[in-house]
Length: 433
Image (tube, helix red, strand yellow):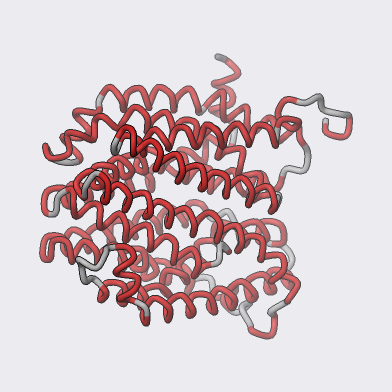
């Protein structure tokens, strides 16, 4: 117990946790209020449609930014004291990100009807929402570019303040649109809310003009394009492909079980995203820069097992509490229409627990640019998730998708442990001490 208290008092990890608490609480609160409004004003069927749009938005945003966020964080962390290298990193990432964003925006705008039919089916006509999304996309990309710079320079406090203000602004716009226009307002809010934060971030950019002046077309270096390309390919495999697979799974639920059941599954996914938000943001803020600094197995092992020993027991207790309080959570967050969602908690929580165990180790793939390993494991996870979802949905109905979530991440965790088994459990040589 003494060592645990010493760790909590002294380690950077716990300091980041406390620093991150305000923005996470804000995100969870805004998420709760948004979901409640959707449940009351739109219902389960609308929640399913919104889920498909959110997943598609994630995919197109990831393509527009080419997964550069993690790459910029990594390389700024390494070269933040080298002015010429820093200028090349910023210039190269900015202009290739700009090109990708323009391509994504034009594609979405001029193929809005086709995208509408893909994610909503021909029964609905929300092509105008897709066009609004296309117009908002460049602002999102600029915002993520700015965030990645601040993260690379470890400007955590400034970054988190921006997030809090942006979340509150997004919430006000979202609730107003849902109240005024129901499903149309909810869909519009999904595509514009992420871009609104740029209005807040712009203040930070104007106050850091020295960085802005470093971004010049003449400083683009083809060598950096090559270095960024693995991050782009990793994003295409995971952050683009995974949301599209989730859309396919949700559409399968709609076809086989009905729109309402798809809404129940989306509600469970939303609840899951809220309680995982704290851990996910912690891992992005802390483990990616930290793993980039680590150059030996001993430190890597120490970081992983410190997380397992100090954070995971708290996570386990939290998950147990969530399971026991599921009737209250569904009542507060949703409506009586969503009572069936309670049946989905058990498998979802099991899957999320294993997910946290595996993802914290898998961040090493990104930090150390283990390109091939990342691609193979992500393709494995995405493929298994889709196949097991179809299999278990046919047997257990909508609950089968949550069972598939647990089975997929369990298999993924086994693969991760096999890959990093030597680093985590092997005998360390003198070189790694």
